[in-house]
Length: 159
Image 1 (cartoon, helix red, strand yellow):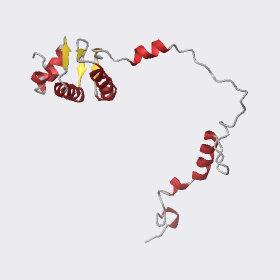
Image 2 (spheres, rainbow, N blue to C red; image 1 turned 120 degrees about the vertical axis):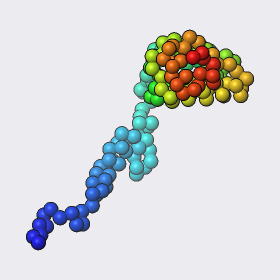
Image 3 (cartoon, rainbow, N blue to C red; image 1 turned 45 degrees about the horizontal axis):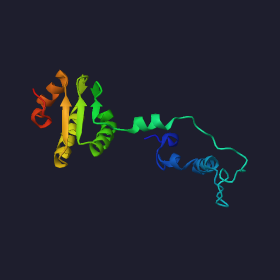
Image 4 (cartoon, helix red, strand yellow; image 1 turned 45 degrees about the vertical axis):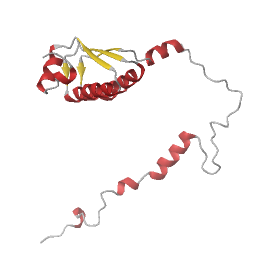
C-alpha cells in the first residue's frame, strides 16, 4: 500500500476557514459604526454642531395615504407564498380599522394554498370579532382553486 501524505485529510479541519479574518471583520465593523472601542465614544455623534441636518422633501400627506388600509383591497393577479406576509400585514391592519373588508378577487389568475389558508384564517378571525369579509367578483381560477380544496363554503364563494 503506497502512502501519499500530500493528499491525506487526517488532521484537516474543514471549518478552520470560519475563524480566519474575524479580527479584520470586527475592525471594519467598528470603523463603519464610528464607535471607538477604547473610549466607547461614537465619533459620528461627536461631530461639530456646524453641520446642518438634511431635510427631505417628502410630503407627509402622501406617506399617510400610502399607510392607510381601507376596507377595499384589490388582490394581485398572482397570489403565492412570496406575497403572504405582506398581504397578511395589510389585511390585519385593515381588519383592525374596519368593520367590513371587501377583497376584489376579479384579477386573480393564480392562487396557491398559502393564500387560501390566509383567507380562511381571515374569515375565521373576522367571525370571532363580529366583522365581515366579502370576496367580491372572484375569478374563475380563484373559484376553481377554492373548490379543489373544499374551501368554497368557508370563503363564501360560489363554485
